[in-house]
Length: 218
Ligand code: E4P
Image (cartoon, rainbow, N blue to C red; front, side, top):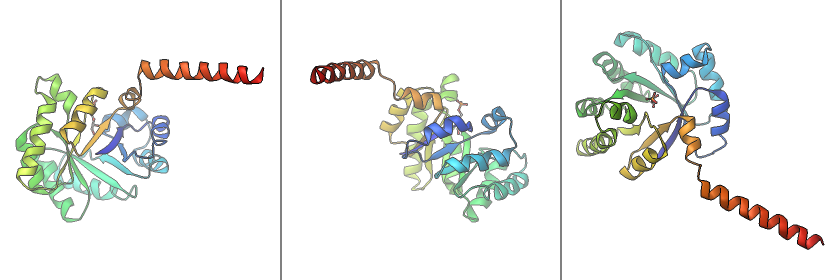
């Protein structure tokens, strides 16, 4: 399973990139806007810390605008994934980009009809938004499982990336569902490490070790 952190914050990226298994970072216009830095220079800065893929979303409204932006963004880093919204215009642009071998992600995927269209277009990834689907009582995890089945039935190669993840247990559930990739906020990533039992056990080991060292010195 590919593993991404959903952030453009350099401090978070520096910390996350210490985990050498990280496959890259994903961003979206809201995440970029929070950073208050020119878009291209922000992506270039991220590329200094990330060996893996950098996901970057187009903001144009027409297929032509999105296509031109995607071609430009694709030059901003060594391994770019270009995100397009799952709309008629977005998929029209994506289908052209696929022909040019650009790695494309359809984002804001909320129905199996979206999944069929994106898989048919041959895009590399689709992002169902689990947390936001749950916010609307749409059962995001069930949607991910059904998306995986639909793609398998179509014999398509499109990968499913679980997005809009609200906590570590959802990461585990999606891993068990066989999702191809997952992206999560830095705070969810950090929470994956947390366990009071690990802390209690480690404190005990440290205290026993200090006692042992003192005993050996005396
Ligand atoms: C995916 O690429 C999106 O950026 C992201 O997962 C959205 O998550 P949110 O619903 O927490 O904003």
